[in-house]
Structure formats: C-alpha cells, structure tokens
Image (cartoon, rainbow, N blue to C red; front, side):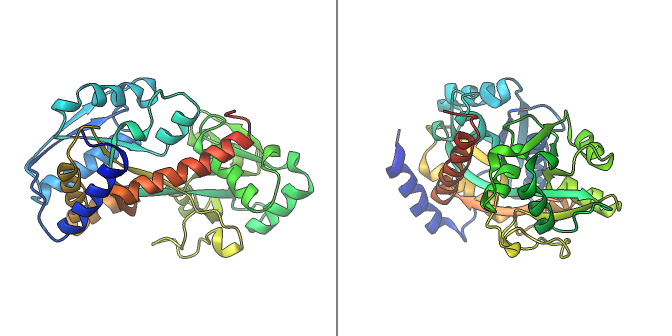
Length: 321
C-alpha cells in the first residue's frame, strides 16, 4: 500500500493527466455514515442520481450505517479496505471536529480523500426587525457587553454552529471565549428562539438562513463565503465587512486507505465531469448547494488547513487541551 506524501503526489500527477479523459468507472457503492434524509444521505443519493441519469455510470448502490457519529462507517471502510475499491464514503466538516475532540477514534488521515464537491457556508442572522441592522452593530454590542449578545444554534456546544460563530467574533478582534452560545435541539428551534427574542442572533447554515430571509422573518448580517453567493446578491460576506472569516462546511467523498492512486484519481475525475451535466444543476439547485470542488492533494491540504483553524479555536475555547 502506498502511504503518505508519495501517494498524494502520485494522485496529484494522475489527476493532472486525467482531466479531459473519461473516467473508467461504471459502478459505485455509496457508504453513508448517517440515517436516511440527513445531509450525508442527501449528498450521496443526489450524486448517485446525477451520475446515473447523465449516463456517466450505470450502477449505484447505497448503504446507510449510522452509529458513533460516523465512527462505525469509517471503521467498516478501513476494515473492508481490500474489498472496497468501488466504495465512496460521504463525509463533511464534522469528521475534523469529532476527531479533534476524540469523539472519533479515526481521522481523515485514515482514509483516502477523493474530492469535496459542495459547500454550505455559515451565516449569522437576526430577526427582520432586529435593532442590529448590520454586522458592525452586532459586534459593537458584543464588545460593549458580551453577556447581552446571545447566539442561538441548532446543535450542541462545540459544534460548527458554535465554533464558526466564535471564529467570526475572534477574527473581528473580540474575545471569543465570552461568547454566549445557546444550544437548541434543532435549527428550527434555534430560529424560533431568535424570532421570540430569546437570543439576539442565530448561527446556522446559509441555506437554512436564506429560507427564513425569503419568508421575511430574518435578515442575514454576514455569510462565511469568500464572495457573494448566487441568488443572494443582497447578502454581504464577512470579508467585505473587514472580517476575514471564510469557512466552508464542505461535503465530499473518501475512499478506502488501500485504494490505488489510479482509482482514486478516476473517482475524482468522474465527480468533476458530473459538474458539466444538466442533471447536476437540477440536483444542486433543488438542494441549494454551492459548488466546491477540491480533489486529491488539494483536498487533503484543504482538510489540513481546516483542521489547524478549527483545532486552534477549540483549544482557545477549552474544548480540547
């Protein structure tokens, strides 16, 4: 089995040679570390739908394997590595968060990163009639008295909702350790808390925030993309407001640790070719996904950078030692 830097270099070379060629793959088995209807499930099944309807491949199958926040599926892919050359496991940013906090005994380094394909950026939003008309006003209120600015999120303390909100205040020069994050059991509950005035803002995925904007209930103060997003030209990025927070909650695919560089590169090429199909635009628009393609060594470098960014913040906030 090829390991480490040499394998990544070889995959990168093969990718450079392969783009423009047709990937020699006709069957994929998608391993999904969560239940039906979740983000991982939607991503895998949406990808499979495009690949088959567009004629890029003929056969797809799916296997949902919930347990341990993804640990069971990762362990299964590692343990069955030699029989898994047709398998792609979907995952996302939590693989980094959970490995840093030791909730997962594995990390992305125990697998072969193939490609990220989509992103859901994070947003900070307030109710439509909030006194905070923009990010600068919310920041000023926080700097004056952090205890009076509560941020709701639809997941536990230490989750992405919490961490990205803290990162946004930290990057503005504020003391992120004083952030009052209020965890709710779901995004809808967190949204209701903001609308009821229980908290001043919500940290949530951009797509969810936009649904509330379209209904006239919320206003987004900033999004963590590097530029304004399609269909949301009125929503400013944090970057354009002088805050360098850029953060993508990516979703992508991993192969087994023993897959050959040639096969990994073929998977990456296939996923890139999918972007050019009209079927992809149908599925992407239906799910309000943002395209984010990073493959092979570029994907690995992206994961390493995000791990450093998240790890530093989790240490600062006391979630890891």
